[in-house]
Length: 295
Image 1 (spheres, one colour):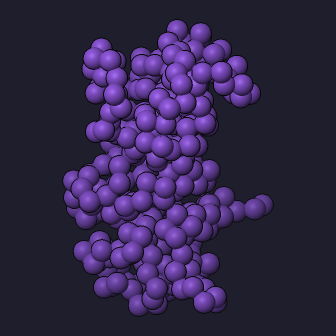
Image 2: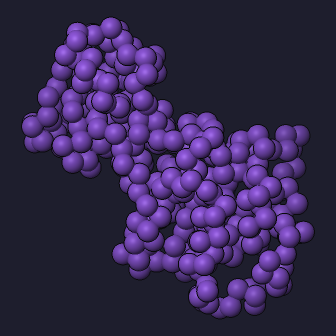
């Protein structure tokens, strides 16, 4: 059974009187190396077991926060004069890591032509957290859980941006499905600009069943829908889960059935939809405003 946190939920908003009304009216698996550039046999053998962190911000954050055992090698562009190189060399010496200076075309190939900014880290695959780890993080902070649930999000740039905002507003963790959804790739890591090192991400086989378990653990589940309640009325105090739907289809019908209340973001312009990461950011900051009000 879910606990009553703060004032009873039913008293906060009459629209929440029915607990089960149907749909309501109002550290990273960076990019798997599937296509490796031509490399000597001994180097190729290492890279088969390696994923990558790409770009200066993500790389520096990984060097600062990750266990040295997880970082296999630092690939640094030959002759690079960027300001961050000094910090990279210093951190590498502190952690006794290998720096390999390579030509730019080598980095282009390793990054699949992404903007690597002259640096790539070869690292061990990221181990996903568990849902229990997310709850433990909230408990350690002495806060009510705030969990983000992504319903079949497909774009790694959206996931990276969402992680960046999630870290900023104090989300305790993100839950994603194992199948038909983006995982933690090098693109996600780069887009998150280091937030991937701080946000716990759990992957589950059955998202709907996991949402039911979250309810049993006391969370109130919110999702997005065009016919939902204006998000500005959302009281996000207490233990909550916020579901962000697929970029094109929104919430899947089976997931929507498990939502306690749907929220909508009103729009007065000609375009009546927002990018998934933008919508997630708006809602996360509304939750932050509700949970951390100005005194």
